[in-house]
Image (cartoon, rainbow, N blue to C red; front, side):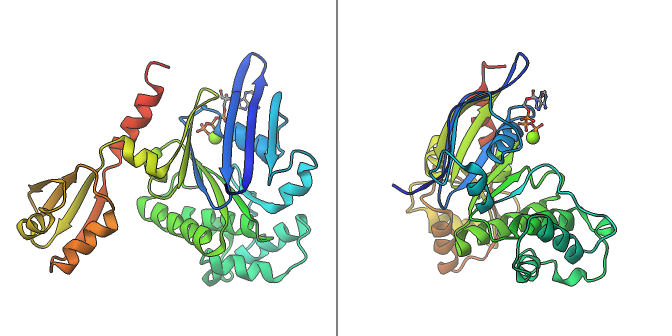
Length: 301
Ligand SMILES: Nc1ncnc2c1ncn2[C@@H]1O[C@H](COP(=O)(O)OP(=O)(O)OP(=O)(O)O)[C@@H](O)[C@H]1O
Ligand SMILES: [Mg+2]
């Protein structure tokens, strides 16, 4: 079994009568990209604040990197983007990172340039943060979180307000950090679709209660995926896919709707391409995921 980076047992956080966290059990393992899903007010930020030491729990235990004491020391191994990052509007990206480095007592000056390169913000030069686009601001927030080379990155709804291209770019960045540097990531969202195929593990929280924790493979198996593929020759593509045990439907504009749970999307695309079909676009229908989430919380409203 791989090492745990974060666990919560019977974790409770009360605000007067309200249980913002109610007996939560949670486990993030090294190497995971953990998608933390819940609607507005579910308790995501509260849990993250407790994890980060910004709020004290009312009951229960947490561990960080397997330790249950001296957590302040363990928290030095964590980088976070919780709530909107404190960015100085009249400072450049570099200046903001320098302030952040000094505040956090990180000795390594080189970490600034590395963080800028990682999030692709080296080109901003003298531009002040107030003139950054939302996507650039989010990337600056991520660069701040990456100072000090954390092993565990915590991101609270980092793609809120980003357009689809911005979301895609951010996802790719996180995938790279996870794959190339082995950084464990906890990322929250109120939209399951935003995390889908990025997160390797999912935790669904609703009204302070952890409803379910499952892996991507388990999630994939639970609902019938629908894949939309736009190709240059739909009939040819359909015949190439005929040997696979799939339901393939030809829609207008050379779009195929594929359901029945293809073993792997990449394998499917390979089959088509090696058969001489150009694949223009692949879309996994997100609504099915939202349906799944709704079925989990169904009857609880
Ligand atoms: N400081 C506080 N005092 C009182 N109640 C609070 C406080 N912080 C959070 N809450 C309440 O706890 C519950 C959980 O809030 P939380 O911010 O954790 O939700 P969330 O899942 O992050 O939602 P969102 O998607 O809107 O960010 C909400 O009902 C909220 O009103
Ligand atoms: Mg929140």
